[in-house]
Length: 115
Length: 106
Image (tube, rainbow over all chains, first blue to last red; front, side, top):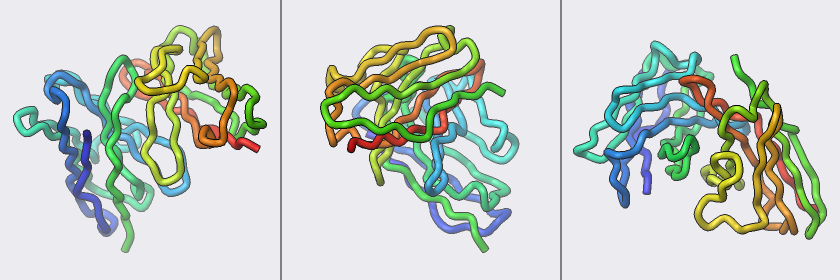
């Protein structure tokens, strides 16, 4: 099970830190991802982190503004969102990486960027 | 940048076979996954590695991938299958999603 938290209303240029708490599986053995979905739009992959944090990737749209991290001791995944823009408004999902697909998703947390 | 193209909508009659395509350059050289998303819910993995069904997915769901096109097929389509469907593949160190296809069961 994956449970996201940390979303909310933030002004343009502001920051947020999203968390994803994992349970029911050996978190430290899985790569993880963040995926977002703007209201009424499709899925957009944001970032990937390998199980040991050796490999970290970002979508061009967030590179330099967002930072993914994880704490395997706490079974938790994080996404630091800085310099937020209106177009970052979306539901943010964490997703477990398995066989090049995402086999488990959280319910999502809504981030709204507005003044 | 790499792109995956899906038709915006597909309609099917109950009991018939629905086919949803996903096209991209040399897509057959990559693994494709498919996700089902119903209104107000997170996506759910349906197919991974082109043709493997995820746990709990009915046998009426199948996938294929060759050349430039991957296809999700749903045989004996039921009303419960009405949803948005997304294809996904990796391009080097990035993940690409198709734009999504809304499946309507008429």
